[in-house]
Length: 216
Ligand code: ATP
Image (cartoon, rainbow, N blue to C red; front, side, top):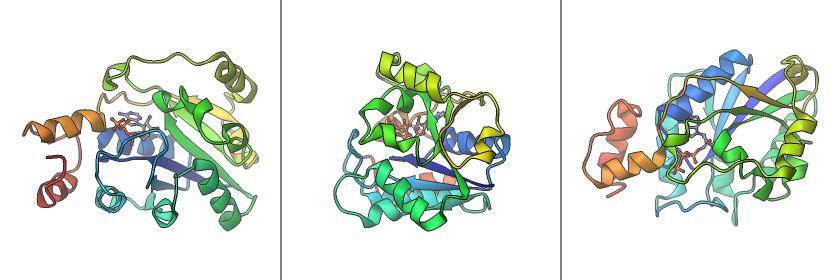
């Protein structure tokens, strides 16, 4: 079965933690292509007044030259909150049911998964590949999984990678990747304090931020 990775985020801005995570999962899970989907109007996060089109433009620059990576700006075209369930439903309508869709996320995002809109239906539309994110990269202390989420993980967890290719949706896998303790929060802070963000993100994205005077 063909496999498509879905990587949603605010990407405010995109950095090497995102890019390396997507690359290692693409290779490690044999994913045919990964769609980066910037959230236009995230229900759980502030965008710090950086428009969705700037965030998408930075993703576009960052993934240029990687044939596995594609920008999908569908959430920019919708009004209201950007809900993952709506995005997945659109993808299913577009791709049909004979494609495996794998939603990529860091452990910090998964700890809040049970607050996502219609979260229990999401697993009917895709698999989830979760990676451990270095705890120190988040300003907030790490949250443990709620009992309901523990149970959800237990019910869908698989160690058999084949499960991801033989069914279109329904399984959760956890993968080890190179731990990069990089966050958009720390990068925004660096720009705000005129510190260098070099080697935390692509130079092309740094140039874009400087040209458009973002994160001042
Ligand atoms: P912020 O610091 O503004 O909260 P962020 O760095 O967490 O931003 P997001 O765009 O919110 O970035 O993250 C999108 C997805 O990428 C989430 O699933 C998150 O867990 C994952 N992610 C972000 N940074 C890393 C990293 N360094 N390593 C692994 N996964 C990451």
